[in-house]
Amino acid sequence: MPDADIDALKLYSFQVFSKLEGAVTAGMIHLGDQLGLYKALNDAGQPLSSEDLARRIGLNERWVREWAYNQAAAKLITVDAEHRFGLTAAAAAVLATPSHPYFGMGMFHDLPQTMEALEHVRESFRTGIGHDYDSHGPQGVVGLERSFEPWNNANLLPVVLPALDGIVDRLRAGASVVDIGCGAGSALLLMGAEFPRSTFRGYDISHYALERAAQKLADSGLHNVSFYDPSDAPTPADHSVDFITTFDCIHDMTRPREVMAAMRAAIKLDGVWLLVDIKALDTFELNARKNPMASLMYGISVLSCMSSALSEPGGEGLGTLGLPESKARAMTSDAGFTRFRRLDIDHAVNAFFEVRP
Image (tube, rainbow, N blue to C red; front, side, top):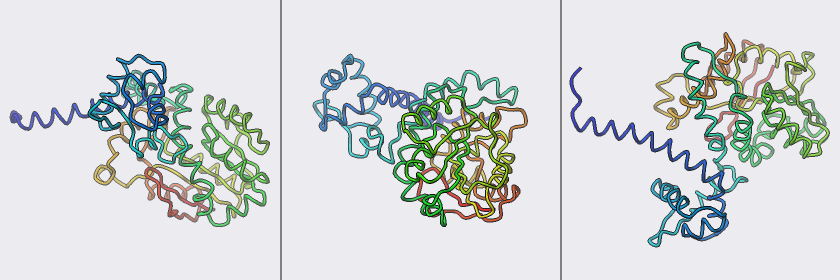
């Protein structure tokens, strides 16, 4: 192998260490969220010195200053000539406004747990067996909840459900709804409050998710929503369900084909399945060329999504970018569904499909 020339070495070294910079800065974003630094900057409504920022939330100034220098160097927060730090309107939305659809701190919430997976996933490379989502602990559930709730809260009721033919009317009249892979139950609780005549059942295999969902249900006061572990209470198999939803979970499942077959047994002949999953293209080459976040997606797959999908022997292992539309069409058809329609819904990460028997 010929020696690399010095310019190529410098360029490649920069490329490698830019990835390390991103990883370290991601850790600083996690701290900014968890320590309330972004919130304090946003609440101030004006740039703050490190002394003022530290004083507002009772932190040590020297540590706050070094954190702020990282964030300003990464161009995530602003800094002026007097070394006062602030947020642009876009930064405030993404970093400090949980109700905003573009709020992005959910993926950083459980960053320590995600990176801790590096310790146990090495054995997976030898055995082929991954780790389910409960391996990330209870904070993994909270992180997913914080990731998906802002967009769902803003769009599920006014945008997504009306895009499905006839579903809103059925929900208003009273329908049977099942959410597979319900997580902490946020989507079901949102729909349950909006459509009191309908009944909503959520199923998940994560004990941490079910515990979180039970607490959120108790806090909501709703009586038309319930949550189950499918190993204790299987989904119905009598074609009695009007509406089934799956949000970002099919690609994580060890046996998605069996789950789809169970959904086909549960759904009415005129029922509807809302399939929401990560946007993916048919080949690695297309994903790498057209998705600027492809490297992130494949890395998260190793640490989380594919690991979950291979957490049992014989798992299908679809992974984060493993369910392109073509595969979703083929798998749903194999399960006995005959109609498949992509919905015209704009989302940075997810694709939305209406599937019918």
